[in-house]
Length: 196
Image (tube, one colour):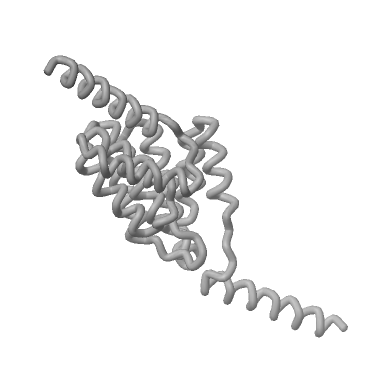
């Protein structure tokens, strides 16, 4: 009986090692805990949780994209945008998880950094890449619409606003601003007609 227990433990251990090596077992604890620490503004602890995966490449290589994404969020929250952009780029380059895609979210956050810097053309490029990687990312459509609005491309902004709504995004700032612009244009047209 003792021999069978030893063989059973040996087989279980080998199975766990093999599945970990092939990325079949995901360990999301450190990512989830890192996100909690990020929300609590415990940035050092969050950074340690995300970096955990990078320190164990033999079993967590498939988690590298997620790890770099988490680290980028920390830098972004701390206002270190250059480092955040570098980490988002690494997240995109290492986005190899078989079930969880992080690429579109990284591009979305890159676009957000550009929006904060009022670099609208670069934001548009980032949001377009997010949408290319996930056409159903309604938030990317919404922020692409805002970027178009800031560059004066009102028709494109309207199209993206409608796409975002169809994808379930209920934010109203974009549609409200577009409505104000349409109303101002109508008022200006009416005043011009009365003057003639």
